[in-house]
Every structure is written in structure tokens, then in C-alpha cells.
Image (cartoon, rainbow, N blue to C red; front, top):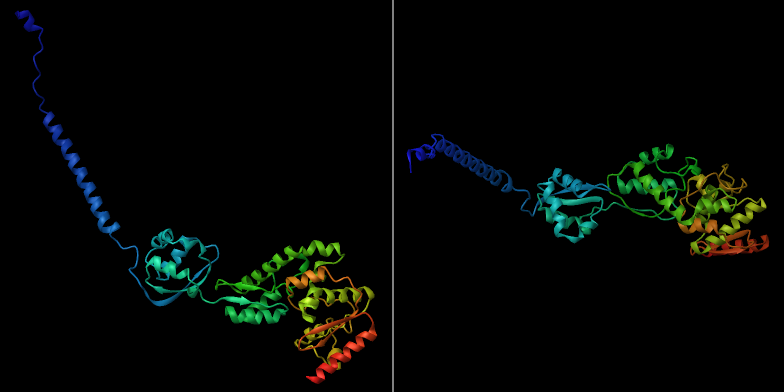
Length: 362
């Protein structure tokens, strides 16, 4: 190789003085990053993952928690956490994953323990014994005043609150044809209340159940087909509910329509009792002479409102009366409430004597 070759041959470059420094800096960054990651992991282990999210149980004391209608699992968990039943909402939300029955968890007032394991709290809530009794049972034929008495006793809501709703029944769901009158619309049924309802909410629930019965019987449309107002049908249903047993509803309805068509007064003792605020059906002559628009001995036509809350069977009978020409009926035996029907006044008098004899023999 010549000197000329030496001139054009690249000699190796000397090592950079910064290369070692750069490597050292990169190594430092990596080490620092690892330290930060380890610190974060350690912090999570100490402050997060190791922090308790659930009580060990079994719990003690007693507390009532009300679950409102439509509450989500998260909302229920929050209510339980606020009441001191579970430690965290998250623990309760995770509990249903291990219990297939969780979908049946419904609204109501639950009697639970404080500081329960979330899964134990859920399991207890799914048992009937945890539910506090808030069942409202209303039989057919109750007057509004009687319904309020029972509802006040079951719910603990003052009866005056229910009476206030009756005076101003807004926002309770009454149909437009009710004319703001509440009597007759507090439907007889069994209601499982949540436990946190006020008077207006209870009344709204009862009226809502009436709406279901009205839809089932197609009340409004069938009333129009009969040439009647649905409110008239409800009044008639309340009359037969008060007067006879269910197997005689359609027969008694026929008597009502026949007497109305004939322009005859109905002469129902039940309407006079309603006017007097009593429940007796054996009335004196003085009582039967009571001045009142509800006295169907003195006033021809229907009373101004229903006299109770009839059930679905009575409403159906008022819409589908028996096809007969009876004008009278007499409950010949007050004990068994056996009722007989008649077309003629003479037959009616015989039945009345039978009634009088049965009363005398008792």
C-alpha cells in the first residue's frame, strides 16, 4: 500500500467522551422509573388493595333500611352503607354475583344488623323474615273512612293526612270522569307497601289498582255502550257490593236497572246507613226518614257517589246484569245473607214476612 492509499483510508474515530455519560443517564432514568413503579405498587398494596372493603361479620344490633321502588343495586348498597350495615357499597354490589336469587330483591323495609358481611346482608334481605310487615289488606265494600282507618293503622300515617288527600285529591290518578271524588276508587286488594309512603302515595297506589280493574273490565267503553256514565256504573257496583253476596250480584244489578227504568226509588237501606255514618242495615222508620241525597227511600235515582269501594266482581255485574224482570229482593236470612228475588209486590211482602220471622227466631 502506497502513501497515497494511506491518505484515502479512514482511520477509526476516537471514542466519544459523551457516550458513557449518555448510557449512565439512560440507566438512571430506567432505575428511577422502576423505583416509581415499585413505590406505586407498594402504595396500592398498603392503601388500596389491602384496605378492607367488607365487614367480617356476623354483625350486631338492629337497624331498619327502606329500599324504595325502582332502586338499583348501587342505590341499595349506598343505603346499607349509610345505615352502617355494610362497609362499602362496592362490596354489596359484588355480592349478587354469587347469589342467583338477587334478582328477586324488591322494595320494602328490611330489618338488618349493623356491620354485616355484604353477602350475609344480601342473603338476609332475600328471606321473608327480614321484611318488616307493611301489608295493607282492604276487603271489598269498605267505605273511604274505613279504608283510611286501616291504612293509618298499617302505615302509621295520621288519618288526618288521608282526609286531607280526600279533600284535595290531586295527583292521585283519578280518572277525569271521577269529578275529583275519591269515594269508590280506593280499590279493595292486598298491597305490599314499601314503608316510606305518605298518605298521597298510598292513595295513589290504591287508585292505580282501581285503574287496572277498570281496564280489565273495560269499564268506560262498556258503560258507554249501555248508555251510562262509568261513574254511574261504579255507584251501582257499590250498591250491590253492600246489599248482597257475590253470587247474587248480577241479580241485584238487574233489580237496580229495572227500578231506575221504571222510575221507582231504589229503597236500599245501605244508602241510608251511609248517610248516617253507621254500618247497620236494620233501620228504624225514623232512620229511614233521614233527609239526605243518599236516602234512596226518599230520593229517586242513584245516590250522588258510590257508598263504598266495590271489587271487580261487582263492577262486572253492574256492567252485565242478569236478564230478568225482578223489581225486589229481600235478604231473608241476615245470618247467612240468603237473598230472594221477586217481580211482584205481593211476592215481596211474603219474602219480607219470611225475613221478619227469621229475625224473630234468632
